[in-house]
Length: 268
Ligand SMILES: Nc1ncnc2c1ncn2[C@@H]1O[C@H](COP(=O)(O)OP(=O)(O)OP(=O)(O)O)[C@@H](O)[C@H]1O
Ligand SMILES: [Mg+2]
Image 1 (tube, rainbow, N blue to C red):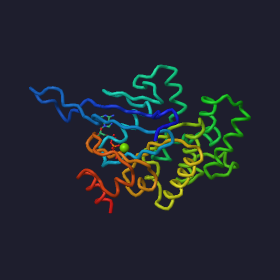
Image 2 (cartoon, helix red, strand yellow):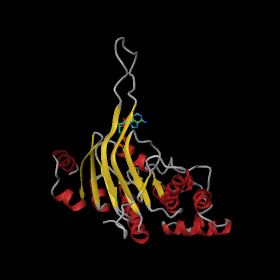
Image 3 (cartoon, helix red, strand yellow):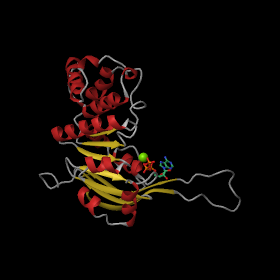
Image 4 (cartoon, rainbow, N blue to C red):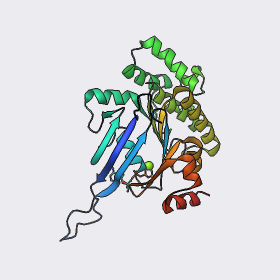
């Protein structure tokens, strides 16, 4: 499932992320530094162009930390990240710029992720200004187009976030992510803060856009029903490690590890 040149869009090899251990209470005499938190340990995964990889696992298993490394928001303690065949473990300026355009994020909380003082037009203008050569008039027209693409009327461009519902705000967040024409969207629990009825609508929108634009997804979720609906392949994390990484259908039909079986059983 690689691109025409046989390339993976993302290749993560043996990734580790450790955080310094936190001291609780007063340091005890005779004790050294607390052990580091091994948030991610030995994780390898790949995403082909246009493919959707689901990342599942219980709370604290390292899903967000892994996705933050891919988004360039978190440094790796060890391991390598390759993007489109290029080493992106410690990206230089030019590569950081390219990644800032081609890798976009959709966040869990549509209330916190939009600036309440900026209109939709202003919110959408920033990525267009940074990552395209469009002039102000063209950016306004493109913003209107993006808004319609996510199912909102272009007439709402000059509204503020508080004038929208949660689901509509998440649509605005999706429009913002689409603005730079990304190749990879990292979505960390993008629908879990929404009402169940709205979740399906937003997921359907994401599926429709994925079909139309051919963008790849890293889709982080603890909701296996959502993952089953949305993802091509699924990687299962447990305590910082990848315990299984397989085809969606194979995972649900015949989970390999006891942990995945428990996870699936717990979801029913
Ligand atoms: N900045 C940080 N400093 C210290 N520890 C951290 C930091 N970020 C994450 N951790 C720890 O790393 C581990 C993995 O956290 P992470 O947020 O990646 O889990 P998660 O799988 O996304 O969980 P959830 O489903 O609750 O979102 C946890 O033990 C967490 O407490
Ligand atoms: Mg998380």
